[in-house]
Image (cartoon, rainbow, N blue to C red; front, side, top):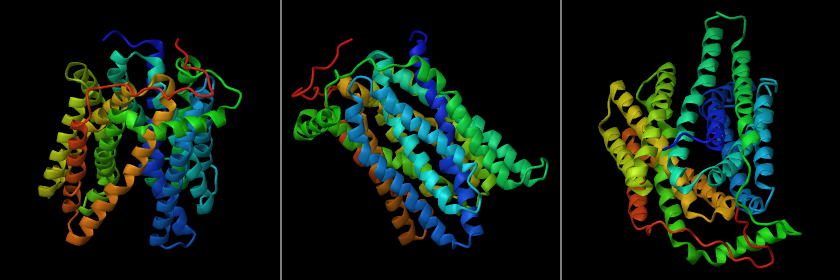
Length: 430
């Protein structure tokens, strides 16, 4: 593969820019900050946990409702980058506000979290859809993998800085309280996100689009209706989405439940944070490796290989009983988590009509979001019935098996036809 173009590098830099948000705000620091705030306000631990779950569900639901509609509108010329910029700025603004809202105001903190989550997820829809604009089909796999790899590396830097501030505050090595140290981590994350998005805003433009019409909102609803009406025309695409729903559910569940699983095994919070950091570092080169191998063995086969690795992870978890086992499991996860997600994105991008990429990536986002429901529920119920966390992880095998079976049935890569133009102009061909 030739060197990345300026557009490909600028696109991938957004992964570098926003990935720290996932660790600092969603996974590691803000959940602890919110729990401490709620506890300070007198909320019971179970109540604050429930509110945290509600906040995540509300954000997911709102994005899932908006995604197809906004995606369809964004396919018209000039809307794609505007929508990306709006959601990106929404995410940054409310991430900064997490550092400003008084610590004891748990309700406003939660409201800011919902809005920043919507901004983060909304911007990602259009970011993913821009893949078709910045590269060729032959280079999509490696470009997508490069994005994930840079994201894993970029995410660790603000995370390490934030953890360093927090630990220094705890040990009284710096003249900051623990609360201020956590707030500083949120501000650094927002600043990092904004600063490294500048190349994207400067160099990326919508190449494939549908020509403007007098009433794009009305036309978008008609196109959306037409897509559902002619759903049988998209066999390859929707079979892939169905497979994706199952296997990515397993991937996300292992990621989101790993901390709770490690805690059940008796690992300390410090150890878990170190494991999380090392997993991110391991994931970067393996994401690039998946992208390279996809050029030789194609995306579908490499996705299936990733599913096999995750199936082995579930089996290994069943026999796991020590901290060393947890480390081995984490390395296995790191070896495939970026690759399977990167190739899923590029494989899907090759299936969709380029001028309708936003609309279809809206559906891609919905399948990914709602996939986050089944796995944690399955793992939770299994763990509760058996009383063993390792049985909960083992139960996720069914998601990977179903996903693999459906993926095997996806016909040879065939691009979905563009939605027929009715009252709007035909797609632009650059």
